[in-house]
Image 1 (cartoon, rainbow, N blue to C red):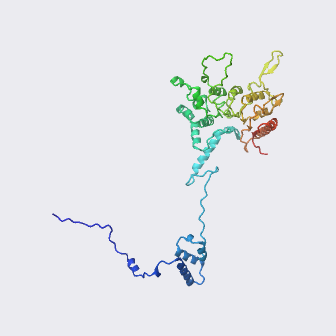
Image 2: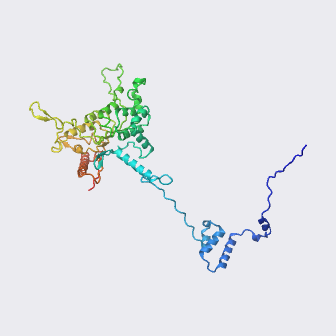
Image 3: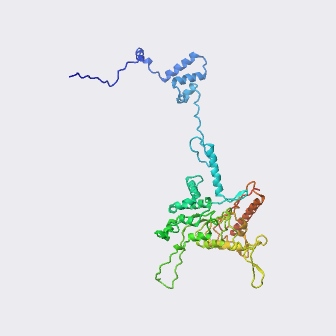
Length: 481
């Protein structure tokens, strides 16, 4: 048999001793050559300094001491030793880079600055957004819609703002593709979506669009095997829906009468079951009309004057107001003068007895300019105040043509600011224009007259309440002297 060969494996490779080991072994191992202490090191430093020069410079001593004691770490020496060795103080650390923040106080994202092309595109988008939120009204100014206090408005540039804006721009597609899911959104998002569609969509919001957002089933689905929603299910769905912002949609894609039919649909008013009454002499308890938004408190019916659409009807508004008893915030921005027959100012009819022509409308063509007569407007406003007696905020931006009707008081015809509208604490009487340097002189003069009338209205209301009612704050424009 062949002989087995066995190779021994060592756990550690054999190594030769370094050359320095032989040299170190030749050194004496006495206690004098051991590591020196701090005092000995200091003494050797002093002797070396005296031997080199009688008056050595402080920089050389500091450099030699620092390199001998602890190279690169001079800050670890105690202050007393640093003073003995004449070592200069350790320089303070370099200040941190200041945190870059934008105009709103928010921190910029880390990293290099964005390219200039990106910034220019962002500024262009912001300008487009501001122009969409305020439609052009005339040369040198724009008409603004002011948000009501307490309404939900996403932050500019946030994810919610971008998504809702994109949905509003592509509303023709979204209203068909997502029509079965829009009512499942949170009430705040649905309220904001309605406001975005009214501003960003070209045609505004239509009755069908409003139904698919606040109702579970749009029109035409009940006949497809889907049971109609009951009053209880609709009330629970919109129980926390408080704000309905229709700015820019009234008179453009939606009328007040259509809004009434949507909020109070006839199919919710189901006939009561015939039951035998306990007492035939006892009157039945009146029931409140069923409504789609039972807890509605904020309603904006602002009109966009740049669309040139049909003016809203005060007659339909007065018919809707008694059903909105829970309303606390109302916006009638850019509404026309209160009148039941606004198109008949110049119309006349022949009297039956005298045969003379009689003014057909309640307000003549020269009623305001010559006679200072606001009787019809005051009557309609008083009817509105009796229906909306819980009102706390009223926005009449752009209604400077009939601001004077708010303080009209003749022969008992006046707006009741003590009882009916005694809870109103915020009244917005702005002109709605952006007055710029290139604004024509006539527009500037109109704004000054509106501001003067707003100040007179404020004094009138404060005088009527005589310090007994609630304090009122009139929001008006600031005119430069």
